[in-house]
Length: 185
Image (tube, rainbow, N blue to C red):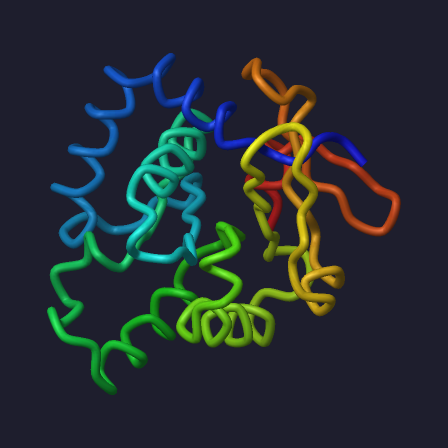
């Protein structure tokens, strides 16, 4: 297996792509609710822990740099400020609508009831070709200590710990480039 994605690598991706990502991020937010989805676009539902803003923004930058539209619920004007039943209904709709599902698997996300619920729903709707976890480690010396059930999912990895480069999706002794995985249906 290639290397897991480190916090330092995500930060570097964001720094390298900051101007372009700000433009893409702003453009995507403005047009998300009004444009119809084009057949060549790939959309990703990014499951995450809300209070990890920096990590989320870095992951969005990485995915945007690969040419995909990333859905995060706090950008959705249709999501109520305080969570309720409609929040769950709307999230279910978005998981079904998006082509891919990625769990930004930090320790906090793994312990989140919402992230686990989203993963379960994503599993039912996307397994196994269109779902992946992106374990985020604190450094190259850190290992991922996620729950055992996460071992059944494809994992997003990187060639390097500190240098941006090629990213992969690895599953059952197979490895494909992340860009290719994002484009497959």
